[in-house]
Image 1 (cartoon, one colour):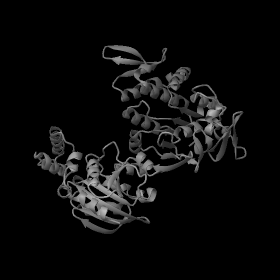
Image 2 (spheres, rainbow over the protein chains, first blue to last red):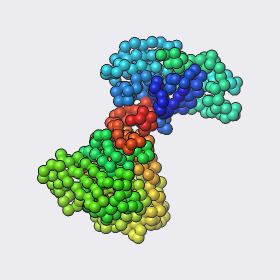
Image 3 (cartoon, rainbow over the protein chains, first blue to last red):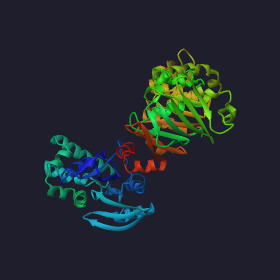
Image 4 (spheres, each protein chain N blue to C red):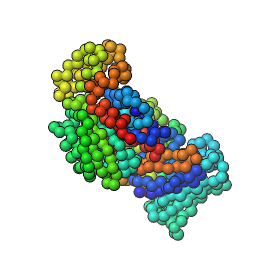
Length: 211
Length: 315
């Protein structure tokens, strides 16, 4: 599997939409997807240069993709902070409010798959709540701790100031260690990655297995 | 709205269109380099008649394009030979501009239709109906000449002060007014002094913006065309200029490569807006995909870049 931003020569792909900007989500998806065998499947991520925290509003584009662009396999990533209590119900209700009919919801570890219908089009949405409590940096912190043996203080993660501090702690530790997130992911075994990024890995694994 | 549609045959880099382009009151053309954006805008710039004098350059509209490409009329033909045919939907009529190396003329499909009938009030102001601002630095010099001829009107209506106030929102300086010196200058207010600064010394973006706005304020055209809209503009300037354009009555057709323009559009929401993604095949056939403002907003909310998405999908 690979992450691409062009579809030349690619037949089977899954479009990523994000409710919270693009970094470090894009680099993590890019390097994690390389860990799953084969090059037949592709994750298609055309991110904007401007980070926009839109949360579940990112789902508003879903009816457009099958109708206008014939895309019906979508990976939706969003930080946990955009979820009030129950991610599954909140996402389902949001999709329903956009006129999408829910057919089936399948659990996939902490992630889940929503099979639905937008007008006449069948759509599959793979939902990944990053963190999963607050944001993806919780998962990145585990990766950094595993490799660089420096503990990241996550105690203030529910506060806006605390989140900024966690991001800068991670940045500092990576700089001091002379490492990048990409390098750390590439140098981590698949089993460990599945512990660190359980839901992203579960979705990638499922996609890789699908015919 | 002045122009509803355009069909192009053998003009500039375009062999033909898969289907005519349909315009809104506010239309943004996007697409890769050499996707046909400038060719479409240049085709529109020939309205209302290729023989009419371009307001800014004082050359005929057709000669204006020849000069822009530093060549002859043949440079306007697809692969530099033959002829070009441009078909416009204007009001409820259809106008056809045929360009050959001997003559260029406009004809109307509907009986009794003509530009004079469609825009009766502008009968004597044909060159002011459609204003074209290509991405070209010499145009800025030409606009300065035209601004000087409009000096009395600009000052009578207070635009020299309004434009300085507008510029103040885009920059960190404080200007009180535009002053018609040689060259056109701005009066800058310091805490204990007032100095005249040449407009051309404020940078290409500010100079271009103020000069375009001055013409648009006074002339009140029916259609304005701006190629590479954001050229030289800071995102703040892009946003304020789009907001300003939103309030105007004229039809606006622009091209852009800038994601800032798209973000600000989604935010500002001019009424009746569409985004047209142009795509030209290797055989030079022009195709396109249209996004509404709502669709643009949804794509941006999903943190997806619409310019690259449409391109990657080959649309």
